[in-house]
Image (cartoon, rainbow, N blue to C red; front, top):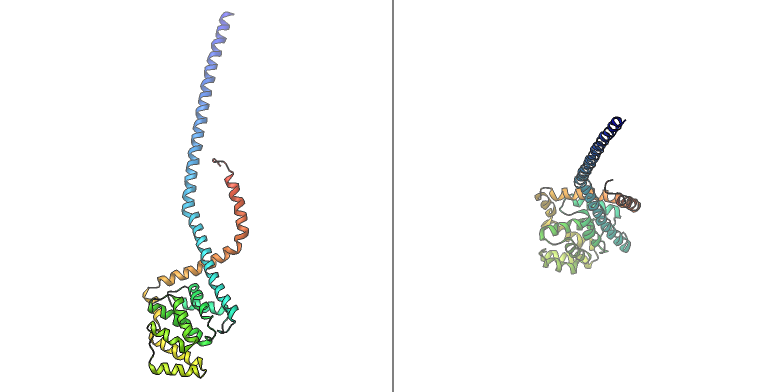
Length: 270
């Protein structure tokens, strides 16, 4: 009996030690599994970070840049529309036609269409006597003057607009910046203006400007190797993207705010 009891105790102790070893092995495996999950989580975060840097960040930057480009374009068009509303269509062009003209001028110069609209078109519209063919020629002349003299578009446009709007008074200002007219041309321009032939006087001024400065904007663009024009075209593409984003932005912002709030509420492991 005593022998059987001792054997039972010995078996129990042996089983208990085996049980302890089993528990230790299970605990070790659990720790290793936890370490594996932790390493996986670290790798996943690293991949997520690289993915964000390589994909998400550039897409976000492109979206922001596109929206900004669309805003600049919208402001330029708004300036033209405001001038048309104030002066009426005295120039003989609609807003859409003026935007198309600005795009064609962009293709032949270093100036973007938004800059042409805001600094040339919108300013010329404030001079009520400049219209029709003279208006179109004046826009090109402003670009050529700025390209040759190194002045900004707005200054060149205002000076030219004043000269065309009031040929007699405007000749003096143009002469100061280097645009030269012979005495015969001055007398002829003055005589036409006094006789009420403002269009004839404008044509003489523009003829002389084109003779002295014609083709300057195109020449500068060609000398640039098309780099600036390519950049302007890329800007036009971003404007289109930005316009679409701005249309869907208000409801999208609300949805994204909800998603961001949900993501922030997730635990680190997830």
